[in-house]
Length: 364
Ligand SMILES: Nc1ncnc2c1ncn2[C@@H]1O[C@H](COP(=O)(O)OP(=O)(O)O)[C@@H](O)[C@H]1O
Ligand SMILES: [Mg+2]
Image (cartoon, rainbow, N blue to C red; front, side, top):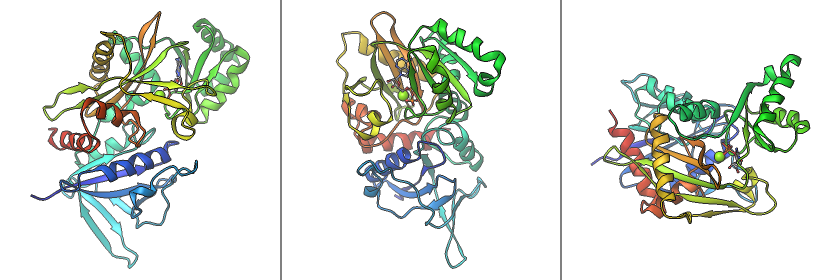
């Protein structure tokens, strides 16, 4: 039996470039090579597609240094002709080499990787791919759209206010926005609507600090969301995976506890200084874990996701469960929650990858 050829794409132009490289490194290391053959292609921060020859063990964060896809590899181009599924490489002698592929796995986070852009490219190319389609990817990338869809589906998504950065700066509107934000109560969280890994996220305690937080968020996206802070809440996450029977299943929930020194689960706490405890499975009162799983599946369904997602919640004494966000391509690094939650549910990392690829290939 011939092996399934998998295009593993990583890096890219989003601010989560390096996290994508680390995620892809773990995927490539863990993939079952008896069943799958990996064709790794990196995308540089400038957007160039290149053949990747580095060892996956080198795709890690070392002493705080984030890995980056360099421009050295042979230039690569995805065939957009659905009759010719694969990648063309430009060789140094001027020739071209073609590598056929059966399925694509864009282990990419953030804009252009997780927002429907690359999914659209795979659709054009007639290539099966892991994960959600164009619409669900785009909807989950944008925190305002996610919340609107969840709210319409009767799933609690908190209170928020959103606006375009341009609009914030027009004199007429700044004070209107501040008034609405004031109505949410302090503190608030200010975020880029479409980003990830806590990039551009700030917690703001008073109106006079709002401007700076908006400017910071606007470095990542022109659309800004301000959310009421769910104070003192526990952060709970739940994985959803579509099994070989085509049905979505929820993993055991897990909890993130950020230790002192971080006001919230920021970039450093996530990837650099090891200051967050990941408790897998979460210790939850009877019935609550099931409620988390039910709500995770309901959110997955409402947003039209496919393949996989990680649904992130706040669990608050007063409000109960609130969905914070839905990630259609969650982190796959060795310390990432998504693979760890599945491990705790009885699905090993290689099985998880195989299930995702099988779902992509078998999907009509
Ligand atoms: N409304 C909120 N209430 C309380 N904490 C929040 C809220 N929004 C974000 N946070 C904190 O900020 C972190 C990052 O925010 P999040 O929306 O998850 O951004 P990202 O998409 O970058 O992960 C969360 O994990 C949480 O610690
Ligand atoms: Mg998050």
